[in-house]
Length: 148
Image 1 (cartoon, one colour):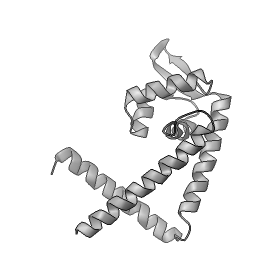
Image 2 (cartoon, rainbow, N blue to C red):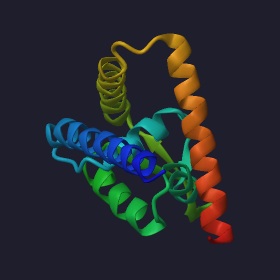
Image 3 (cartoon, helix red, strand yellow):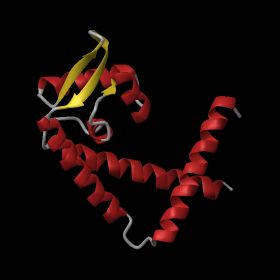
Image 4 (cartoon, rainbow, N blue to C red):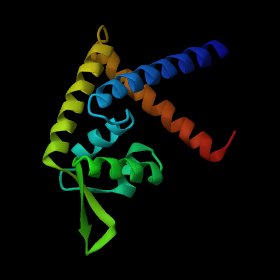
């Protein structure tokens, strides 16, 4: 049983470590931090805009981190805020044209990394793998809420 735990923990840790390194390398080219990659890929899916609170939720980040990142991205002209009912607090975050181009670049790099990482995995095994990961994540989420 411990062997399963060690294999699982080590593999997840390695995947995460390399993914963060790849994201950091891509974002460094643009003078941004690696964790911002997930903000761009998420915002890209919401061309009509997304609130900072929803972005934080979808990216599993705290609101303060999102706020700091948005400030940096705004200064670089990559994101703009669109007030809702003249309320900046619930403003929609939208990628600018330059931000959209960067998000497309990041998405392309992410797809290349995912394709490369999945070499040698059949589509059937990939589907089973993702279903297993989703099940494990859901079970661990429930356990973390309910406690051991």
